[in-house]
Length: 196
Image (cartoon, rainbow, N blue to C red; front, side, top):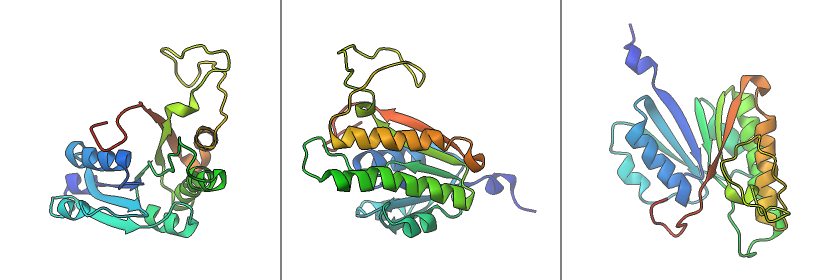
């Protein structure tokens, strides 16, 4: 008979797992998720720091892939219990084309959602952005709100537009094929590699 603790081990997938936020999520899961049996790290560019994680008690699987490639996403998602979608193209300085930003942030998110539906992965956590919330068209600040708080945001740049569209896709997927996605906005901070 299988050990009940072993039977409850979960497979997590972190898209964009080698990015700033993704790496912190990966390390946090390894430290704080006792039910973690396998951690899949999916990214276009795999970091050398992943090798040190492979020596621990949790199976760490590095998967090189691109969220804009639906078949690569589906292969990575297959068999995962939880997907944490941190992959995205953050561009607040206008260096990337609007088309590329949309392809990565919106189509990439659509690919993740579809892969979850196709493979029966029921739990999806989407990391959004504070850029989705503002700026407000009337200049009003946003205090102590939640998803139901009325707030007129004006998105004029490709990055916040793409994140708002992607967030809407995730929220609309709630309950679809018994999938329960959630959104998480990450607070502004040091995006140069310091502590989040």
